[in-house]
Length: 228
Image (tube, rainbow, N blue to C red):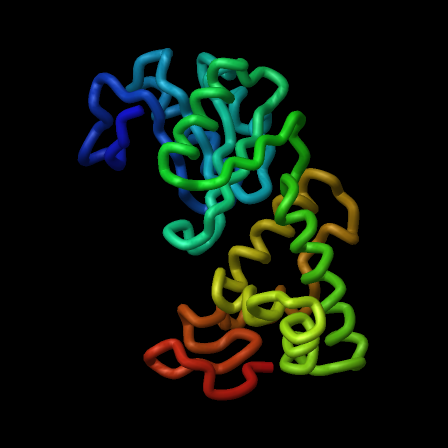
């Protein structure tokens, strides 16, 4: 399968592409508008994929002409390092589309995790979010500070980094948008972003990329103290 260059308004897509993967802000309205526009500039046989970490394929596929050619390919952050890619098919995703997307993932040397049915948050993030939610609940309940919880995750559970360290690495705002998208879809208060995460995002403390999140970081990205 051919690798695909980026498509932008200034650099329109080539006339023939096998696969285009979107990786923009985690907002359904923005993604739908992007795919609707992109769909007018590509052949109908091109597979369109989203790198969304939480939005189900059907919520975006209805914006294009051929929903059978739509699939989610969720690359984990950092994508160059993490081997897992979730291949999420919607109710209208064709078998050939899912097979081609899976083959593409394998061609990159990644490990495809194929979901038989769509569900918000998919598999890995639903598991991860359960850990993150409990970690935040323990912190907000005053049972332990962020460093103690991260240390427990690393030393007792064998995690390479704790949940707060991971949120700072991937971006506190990414976790916020993922939870918000899920809450917008389900309406369940349990799916809403926590007060702590909401406050960090409102204050612009988004983790390593801003120098402050759950921890403080210097200009090299090294952790130098607590952020909350």
